[in-house]
Image (cartoon, rainbow, N blue to C red; front, side, top):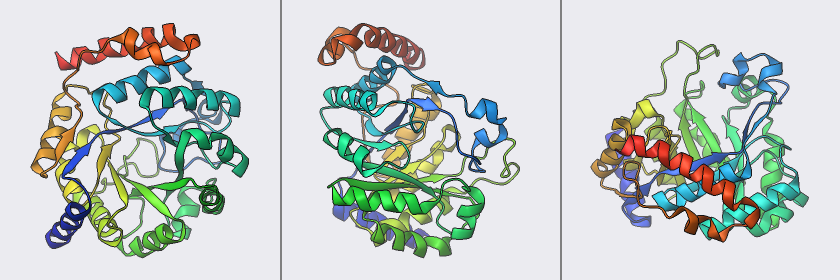
Length: 330
């Protein structure tokens, strides 16, 4: 295992600068309206009337969080949320304002999109993210019964046709084995994947995985290392949780470009946040941005680039977020 990680680290350093950062995914809603939830998700433990009730954030709230990403030096991972929660027109408005703040296009992870939708969003997005989770056909059918892979593959094919990029999510610890890496390697090649998010299962109380051990850092690192060696230039992002900050060093050495899933707003300035940064340094990576130090932010200046319709409420939400984060950094 040590030799594999060393080889992956060598490949990484031959293709990327020795640096890393935190990557923030921004969610505009939370709900699951699938016939059957994925069995690893906490929503699978909720009554249908609760899990299907959409909790939707306002556009100013989303824009305020986007400003925080920019000012803290975090990468914007992707925009995610429920399918059909926003009309295509409202989604375009959100994407346009987000682009204004960041000065660049973003990834979207909002379910299986039609070619028409992708063409509509294309001026504002880098590409689309497919939530694959697990590639073994039997396991996928059992764990994600209402999320077949076929429609995602079709979306990937159409996105490539119109010049968009493809990304995917993978969760390790769902019952697969490292022997399944060959399935991942084949999938990446066949579907023109340019970015992958590799998460370790976060076991939720009440799910079928309750009582099991979470995947070890070595196991998650092996998936990342094999992926890095097979695909030297692939953008690989590792997902950790606040209780797995000690995973960061080995996951970065295994070839991950960036870190996500850490609850950065809630845990800003915490011991866990400090550990994430320290683990990155132990891995020989410069940590871009910060999870512990809050820079001075001129709220009025930062909201000045967005549409007048959203400025006042975005400024209000931004001040609320900053007040919360100051408690952690003080």
